[in-house]
Structure formats: C-alpha cells, structure tokens
Image (tube, rainbow, N blue to C red; front, side):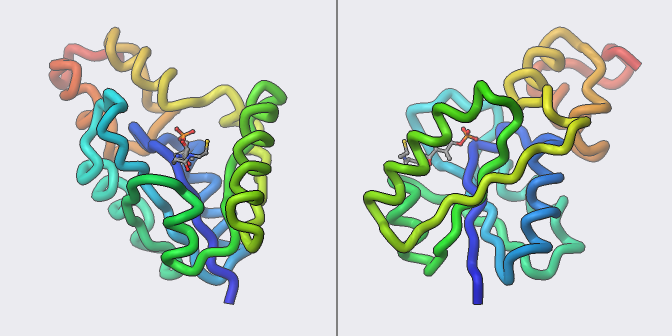
Length: 166
Ligand code: PNS
C-alpha cells in the first residue's frame, strides 16, 4: 500500500494544484492532501475554509483525503504512515528550494521519498500568489481556479458579483 502526502498552503487551491492531485491519485494507493496550519502566516482563507474547499473538489476521487497539519511535515508523514511526499515543479526556479526541502526531509526521515510531478504546461505560470494579486484588483481569475471558488475568493476582497471583470 503506497500512501502519499501532498502538502501545501493551498491559499487558495488553484487549477494547478488540482491537476497535481488528480495525477498523483492515479499513481499512489492513498493520497492525503495536507493543508499547512501555520498561524504565523497571514492567510487569505482559514485552514478550515481551505480544507472544506479542497474536500468539495475531490469528491470524485475515492482514494484522496484532505487533512490539516501543524509542525514538521516529516513528523506528520510518519504519524499517518506516508512514505511519499508529492510536490509539483513548475519551473527551474522552483527546483533549488524544493531540492533543499526534499533532501532535508529525507535526512530527518529516511523512509520518506519526495516525488516531483512536473506541472502541466497550461498551469506552469500559476500560483496562489498570482491568483490573490489578480483577485484583489478584480481581475479575471476564471482560468486559474475552479468555478465554484471564484466568488468566495472575490468576497475576501469585498468584491461583489458584477463588480469583477467578466
Ligand atoms: O504550498 P507551499 O507554501 O509551497 O507549501 C510549503 C510546505 C507546506 C510544503 C512547507 O512549508 C512545509 O512542509 N512546511 C511544514 C514545516 C516543515 O516541515 N518544514 C521543513 C521543510 S523546510
């Protein structure tokens, strides 16, 4: 049984994250999408909001669970019996940081392997930060996030339906 963990901030979840979730669910037996509960980080959505948005989006994936975690990722991976960490790589600029984390995590927990999925080409530019920047100015985010999240994101910036870019 291969149990994997796909950790992240998911603030908010983007089409790029969903693509990685779907593709990794195809290659492992069980996938835990793990939302980092980091009180120090100034998040747009609460952890509970992020977990419930993700849960809505993975209803058709029976081997995927959404959880939140605090503290070190390797400790949480050990606790749930995961031996694979999934991370998406968008561009070469992601690589240095991801390599450092993957190697550190492996030193801390030698049973854990990090598996990198290269982001699908159509999402290679996408990040939660870009989504927030566009949304904050009422820009069109319909290509970046699932349809059912669009209004929830605009609401965080006090933008009502009709005021945003259509
Ligand atoms: O979506 P993100 O912000 O790129 O995800 C980063 C995340 C959550 C994977 C990373 O910050 C993390 O694992 N945090 C938990 C704390 C930890 O284990 N840190 C050690 C690696 S530096």
